[in-house]
Length: 336
Image 1 (cartoon, rainbow, N blue to C red):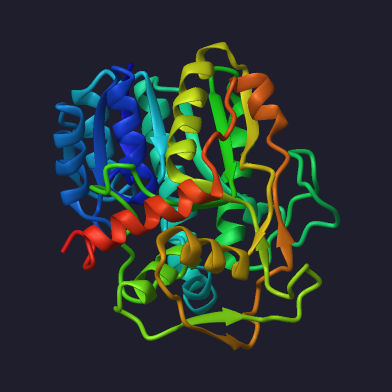
Image 2: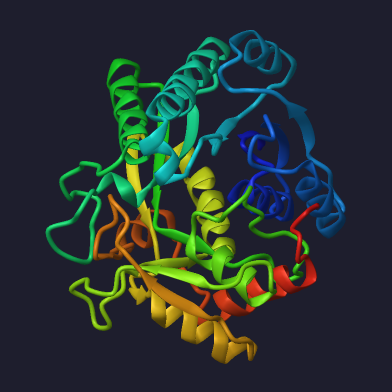
């Protein structure tokens, strides 16, 4: 297939580009580089001996999108382009609704005009809000606790409504849990701007000496050690999930949601201890107040993805922390 990947120079996007290259697909990447680096795509090219065509641009630029679709005969789109920091979304909700929601609508309008109706959308477990029970299945009630989560939920609704209005749409909503790790080569990985918003890059930056200590936000949750529990999934498992959804889309009717997770919940301190043990490096930390919008625990039932897409996560917690450290120790300043 020929696939347009929006946000393809970012963390999950670049690993998915690598995965698609290895599977023989042709890729064009559209990215505005607001939280990514074109260096990631250069390294993907070195690892796969195949270069994606890169276009610097914004998904809200409808003229640019129409030109891209006119110049390429795409079979499908994988849509990663979006802002993703919970705290920032609370401070600047306008940015999140404009970029994530409006941007997705502009993209889908350009897709429909070009007759490209297969879409894999990068959604999130945040659409489940604070779940009443665990593990989470796709039929759970949907809600959100912050503007980032609401932006993902709104785009999901746009996709569902589009599929009802036009039966030609084939859309997979991939609700993934907490992506971590890096490609086993250590050549591509997560390179956040400024202070990391996610746990694992913060742990690895403390371990490499870029930051003095890790702040653990809350130790009084109703979990086995008081710290928040999440379903951490290796980014390469996640990339293979996008490939599985892409391959299945021609057989799918309408819009369907799939959880991508391991089904295992690890606490913040579980991940710190696993990182220290596996990599033999210390990670100093301190307990800090809870963050607004955080929930106690969240982990997936990914049975639908296994049954329908033929996908299951295969990489372990040790793989996650080992590959995170290989990337960070080989690239202490990321792609810079």
